[in-house]
Image 1 (cartoon, rainbow, N blue to C red):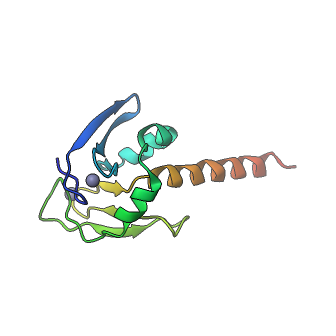
Image 2 (image 1 turned 30 degrees about the vertical axis):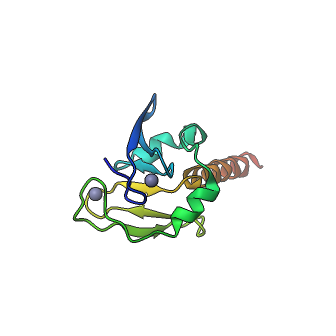
Length: 123
Ligand SMILES: [Zn+2]
Ligand SMILES: [Zn+2]
């Protein structure tokens, strides 16, 4: 599989929570449908790329899906964190996050969870 942004090869990372593809050059992450949900807990372990490089590649939005090449990926915005843009395939529902973005997304969710939890604890 080839990276839709820089055309380098992905390497497959095997984790106890599932597999993820990471680009060997731009370090962007590819998730098959719903895989990103299981991997949020270990986001920092798989999202090891330089966020500055990720920001540069974030400018590239006009890409085709690496799994279904005739499918154009849609640029999506994270509802809770509107500064995070990722690409999603309308056919296979795979997602591409630039380096640093997945950690960013996951950190917010953790903070959000703790906030909800402490709200419950309050009398
Ligand atoms: Zn790449
Ligand atoms: Zn696809």
